[in-house]
Image 1 (tube, rainbow, N blue to C red):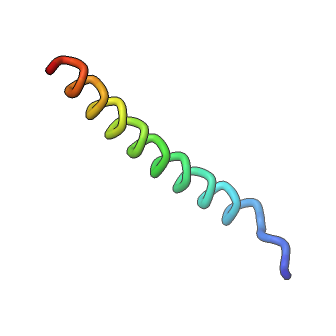
Image 2: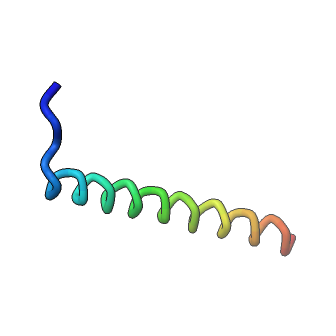
Length: 37
């Protein structure tokens, strides 16, 4: 396996961070909506 360069690592990290943040927001949104009901 070839080691990833710094740019690819930072790109993948930011991409994963964006995906996790999106799932986190959706989860909290559904949790808050279900709590209001």
